[in-house]
Amino acid sequence: MALGFLGASGYCLSHCPGTRRSLPLISPIRTDMLHIRKHRRCARPDALVWELDGAKAVMRWEEVRLLDSDFDVTGTETVRQTGQAFLEKLRPSAKADPAEQGATPFPEASDITGLALRYHPGSEIDFLEPCVGTGIFFSALLHHVADRHGTLNIHTAHGVERDDQFAALAHDLWAPAGLEVLLRDFLRLSSSDLPQASMVLSRPPATFHHRLSSDAKVRAADAAETSSGIRPTGMADLYSHFVLATHKFLAPKAVSAWVLPTKFLRHSSGRALRLYLAKHVTLHRIHAYDARAFDVTRLEETIDEWSVVVFTNELPHASDAFEFSVGGDLFDPNETTHMPYARLSPEINWLQLADLDEDNSPTKSYTLEDFFFIRSGWEVPAPKFFVQPETRAWALGIQPMHMHPLLPHPTAVTGKTITADEWGWPASKHRHVVLASNKDEYTLAELDPAFLRYLDAANGDTRQAAQRSHDALWYNLHLRRPAPIVVKAATEADDGLFRFILNQSDGIAGPGWITMSPSLGFAKPWFLNNDVNWSEVIEILESIRLPDEAAKPTFSPDALASLDATPLVEYLANFD
Image 1 (cartoon, one colour):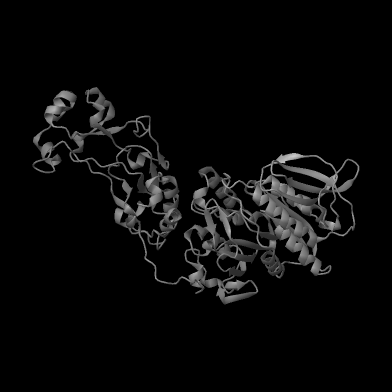
Image 2 (image 1 turned 135 degrees about the horizontal axis):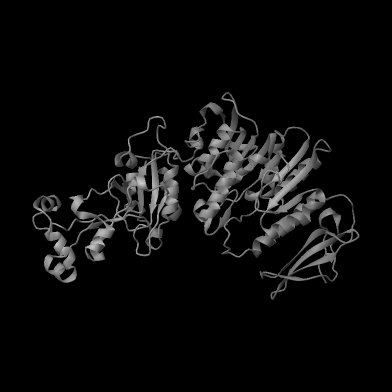
């Protein structure tokens, strides 16, 4: 016989036969969950019962008896916590989707909700939770509304959740209290999918940027830019996109409270979010919690530091100021300062700006030359002799072992990737090759007599221009190796001075290019057994800002090498 207990809305949960369906196996456990099932002729309260008997996990509906017509928010919150723990156990430890995370503890969620209500415009609340999970923030809001004894009213309430099990649980628990749950990917919603909200409370997925696929990054950046006009770079973590993508759903003066990893305050990955907070909305509070206040471990990664950000949807003024605090509780912080808007800049560490960063010790500054060998493209000696169209080299009968492909000239490259054909050569028309060899003439006579005949036709000036030393073969040009990243001058479509291009071919960069090849700065244990994702590295390079945007330096290897490499340092730290 099933165990009965007093659940949400005062229902007594008791046993009766019902429908079963299989669920993933975990340790033996049983829990009951209230659900208002819509039957053909009436709404009948049932209990959603999960049982695991050690052999199979099953879920079934059990009819319950109504004891009271009032919605018991405290009892439902207790059931929510049980259901949250149950669903967390059902998650495979190696689940492919990295966006999952635990729920915000109820005491902190209640504090955050109470603080947000101080800035809510009026008594009619249109609530939105972009990542509703099991409904922790809606639960906290219901508690506060109940405590206000009719002075607040929830006019509409919407929650969005992409996980079907969590969405089902949130609906089962909170639909009787008015929450409408959408089983959707929030970043794919348009402004017509939801009404404008006067209150947003959320703790979005904290997926690191290097855990996102390229397609996922593009979709998230598109959603953020469409909503806010700000496009995060490829190194922005997923929570930044959620905050920016929510802007289109905000009513004028709507209040938002977000629980976010504290790194956005100090890391370059949070620049787009800091720009939004500094220029597009009015901040009222930032509080950085103590380390491990919200422990979250997913995919062998732990986020120790979390902050809450509270703002309203109205343009700020330079004379505005907001409260910035760290440590302790939200309403009893260890340190507090009042930060004027005039001091805010998206380019700097906000914790240091507020003089609240615990780690204020001097740190080593890095530039790109600490991580790359940066130099101009190769000036081939005697190019009229050694650089020939590929078609002519084949016509002369020269063997491919002595043909070395050149990259197209920078003016001929319009995209951000130079692809390769099946032989590794640049996939382009009208290719040129460098003719060179480290074989002596006796070997060439046997392996490639056509190339030897070509060399014999060289005049004295050509031989002298190519000769590196008196004891070296004059036609051994000591070829440059292909570089994974090549750089050309930026066009009007680019934000900075440089356009970084991924070179997937074996082509050698010639005049007009700047090449970037990894140095010992990339000699990290993770990279010894894995390929470097150069597309991600380029995204990070594109996020680096010039020290003075107005005074652009000349396009040169020295100017590139001197750029601040802090974003790259932060990226490489993920692989320690």
